[in-house]
Each structure stands twice: as structure tokens, then as C-alpha cells.
Length: 268
Image (cartoon, rainbow, N blue to C red):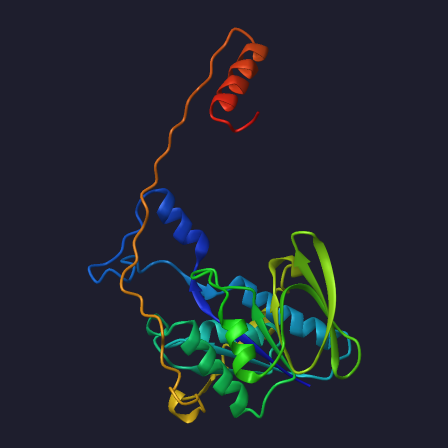
């Protein structure tokens, strides 16, 4: 069985949030890129859980080869981390991710899957922590003519061609079965990914990802052209209004709070 994980390199969301909270996240003069150069780049956490999903399938006895592919100018760090976790093959499609939208990204990833003669399972994170659009897996399924099962918290093989997926929904868990090949997106409810051993990490540092040129891929009639272009991004200003409620007793403070909440129609 061949499993492909689509990984993305993102800015550390915790570091970005910290800059926002102190009002120091700034957009450059081009109106598109951040001025901060010290924010670490790492693998999208949902994609890391997708790798863990593939590894758990292998641990359960599934005979599989695990491929990880990423789009970026140089995603070597996250791909070496993939190998340290247990991936067999890693590849990069060198493109400027700031110039490709979800459609172009899906086109490139679909082209890669086709270039390795397809896959039985394609695993993606439920969304990327930077864009939060979650459009690539659906587009990928359409381009590869595969069914798509979203927000999985558990994945298991029923037999050699059927996968049982436990989905997270607002109404509780939903269990579905899908025939391979299929695209499955992994949610954070899947659990913490394994931590690579020191020995595997050291060995992974010597791994050089396979470079796959976009020109070598079959991208369809429009060549994977982006359909959406970012013209500007900006940081919303943060405003806060904190009021202290005083009273002669806790009961008086509570009563005052209730009245304010009723006035604001927060409660009836």
C-alpha cells in the first residue's frame, strides 16, 4: 500500500499570536509579507498528525510505503522531521507558496501523486494553521477522482481495500467506511504525534528530499495556474475594555454582574 502525506511549512502560530497580542506583528511595504524574520517555521501541526496516522496504520500491520511531499522553496527541515518520525520517502516541489492559491497547490500535489503512479491513501491535515481555508483536500480529491473523508480522529484498515474512519462532528463521532484510493483529512482530535528518537533525528539530518520540478508534473490544461491572487493582508487592531465591578459583598457584585449581562442581552 502506498500512502502519501501532503505537508505544509507554516510560521509558528504561537509566535505569531504573541506578536499580535503585543501589537508588534507588522506587514511590510509590499502589503503582503511580514517584517518579522525571527518567527520559526515548522510543519503544520495537522499535517504532523497525518504522518502519525500513517505510522499507526503501519504499526497495526498494514504493509505500506509512506511518502511525504511539501511545497516550498526549501522545506528540508520539516521533511527531515518526517523521516525522523518514520516516513520512507520525502519530496519537495520548489515553488513560492506565497504565489500559489489552494487550486494551484492541489494541482501540484495531484501531479505529484500521479507521478509516483498514484496512491492508495492520501492524508492531509484538516487545514493549514496559517490560511485556515481547508480547501486543498477537497480539490485534491476532485483532481485525483478520489472520495474525500474529512476531520478524522481515527483511521483503521478493515481489509486490503477498505478504510474505516471515525469523524469528529458537532453531534458526536460518526463512523464511515470508504474504499481505497481515498483522501482523508486528519483533525487534532487524532492525538499527539510521536516524538522522534535522537538517533532517528540524527540520521534524518543526512536525508536530502527529492526535488520535483513543477514542469515535470502533469498539471492539466491550465498548468496549475492560481485562480485567486492575494493583493493585501493586514493586522486588525486589538481593542479591549475591562471594567471592574465593586460591591459591599460577593452577592452584591454577582447581582450587579447579572444586571449588566441582562442589559447587554447576554442572558435573559
